[in-house]
Amino acid sequence: MSYHAIIEQFFLSLKGSGLALSANDYHLIGEWESRNVPVKLICRAIETSYSSVEGVGPLGKIYDQDTANLAAQTRGFKSSFKRGETLGNYQEVRVRHLQKRVQDYVES
Image (cartoon, rainbow, N blue to C red; front, side, top):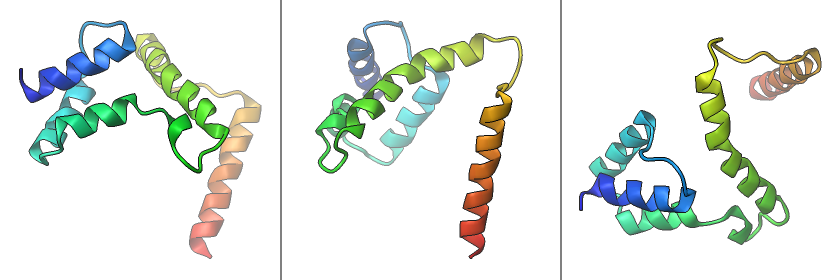
């Protein structure tokens, strides 16, 4: 079985749905292969939960949940006829505030 096929089958078996990975996933797997990243390492990283990482603490469960939601969110973004995201005023203010804080930090 090829490098791509092993990783694809492993990921899809954990995910429990879907027939293939995205084009971006295949590109990423190609990069791993060109850098000689071992398949066992990739599979272990895919199945490792944030909850099991020392030092993450109770945030691990939140990170796991967010990661699990990413696939559904990505499908939703791609299925929309409208390009981009629309944020509410409150969200836009928070994003602008964050960008300002980061800019201030970088410039100091």
